[in-house]
Image (cartoon, rainbow, N blue to C red; front, top):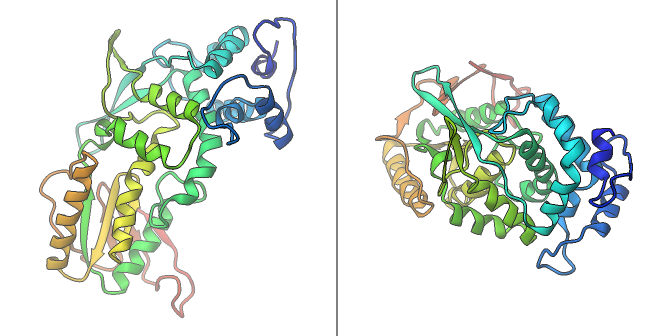
Length: 340
C-alpha cells in the first residue's frame, strides 16, 4: 500500500485503498472535513483539524517534510523508515488525532555550534510529528499570517531577509540613525505556554487544534535517553515553532506601530530606528516593560547605538550590507541589497 493511500485509509477498513494524487484540492479537503468525527467545540465554524488531516493536504505536507530532510527524532526513525511505519499505523494515528487522544513524542535535544561560540539548542520532533505539524501549518498559517504586522519579515510566506535590509536602509537614509538593537535572551526556551496559547486562541477558534498545539508545547525533551518535562519554551526544530513565535511577538510590533516608530523584526530579533540616543533610551525602557509582560527578557545590557553608515548596519546577530542607491519610493530606481 502506498503512503498516500494509507493516509486516506480509515480505521477498521484494512482492505480499503483510497489513493490520492497531486496537490491539495478544495473538493478533497471538503470531503475529508465532512467525514471527520470529532468535536471542535465551535459548532458551525471551520473544522481546521479535519482540513489539516485531509488526504491532499497531508500529501503536500509529506512532500515538504521529505524535501527538508532532517534528522530522526526520539523514535530513531528516518524519513524512509517513517514512511514504512505510517503505511501500517497512519489510520490509527489519524483516528487518535480526531478523537483527541493523540500524544506527541518528546523532541530530541540536539546542540548546534554557533559561529561566535556557544551552542544553539534544537528540539527535533519525530518525522511523524513533523508531518502532523506541517499539515497543521499549511491550514493555520494562511489564516493567521495576514494578521501580523507588515514590519515582521521572519519566516513568513513571500518574505525574506532581503525585505529586512530594504526596510532598515530606508529608515537609516531617512535620518533615523540611532538603533535600538533588541536581542531576546533564550527566546525559544522561555516562551510562556499560557500566554502563547491565549494569544493563539484570539486568532483561531478550533479547540481541537488548540489542544493539539498545546500538547506539542508540553511534549517534553529527550536527552541521552532521558525524557524531561517542559513547562515553557517552543524549541526550534519543528514546523510550527516560527509561526508561534510570530503570534507571541506580534503585540510588541503593534505597540511600536501605535507609537509611530520605525522598526524591523526578523523572528526574535528587532531593530527600532530613532533620531537620538535619548529617544532610543525611551524606546528601550518601553520595550523592556512590554517584553516583561510576556515573561521575556532582553539579552544583556543593550544600549541605543548609532548606525555607522547608512549602508552597513546589523540586526542583532545578523549583519546586513546594502548598496548606496536610495531606498524604494525615491526618484532613483529600486536598490538591491545583500546579506553579508
